[in-house]
Length: 258
Image 1 (cartoon, one colour):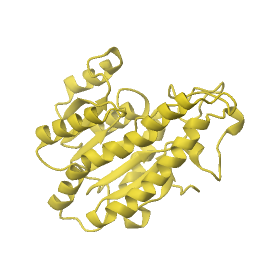
Image 2 (cartoon, rainbow, N blue to C red; image 1 turned 90 degrees about the vertical axis):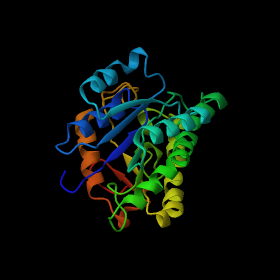
Image 3 (spheres, one colour; image 1 turned 60 degrees about the vertical axis):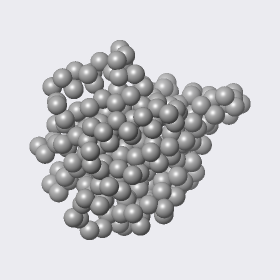
Image 4 (cartoon, rainbow, N blue to C red; image 1 turned 30 degrees about the vertical axis):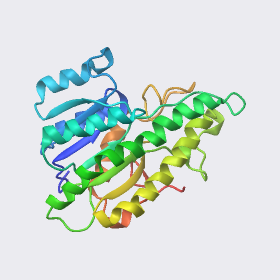
């Protein structure tokens, strides 16, 4: 990844799936970040064992507790990152997300509220909490323009939230998930308008239909491996600039319709 020099990155929902693979591939880079912050709900739990194994081999990996629906937890995580690093944060990847397998008829207020809290409100609150560190990274950077090496918010979205595409409706309605990702796309657009003057790039990324617990929620096998998806995402992130601010792209860099 020539030219992709991220000194610090934070990934939410990093104990499995795409989040865990993002952490792995950042650590495997020839020029890995000085700090990789991997957040999850319970760093000491069974589901974080693989993260702990990675941390035992990589001193630049720090596991941080963060519950994306809990403002107090988010605030505490931001304070811990600031304390440990003592400088700015270059790249924030809002990856944590959930899905509820429902139909249009069976969707409930409870599921809708829970999915929105995690997939929309969570990224908003996390971005707000880490905004001072993103701004600090901009102040410390000598780069011009916008880039992921300087300061960026990457929201992991889904083509399922594209109102134009409505990907795979025949495989599952998952209304709360689709609505939440459409809302996340709008949040990304708002962030691109609100934070560009601070030197921060904002983008929504569709990782593809990936072989994860979430991706395999339907009756069919997802076609894309986690490794291939994340390699594509990181390749896309290397090339982002001002022209990409506020856009919605997939893991291959293709611009998707809202």
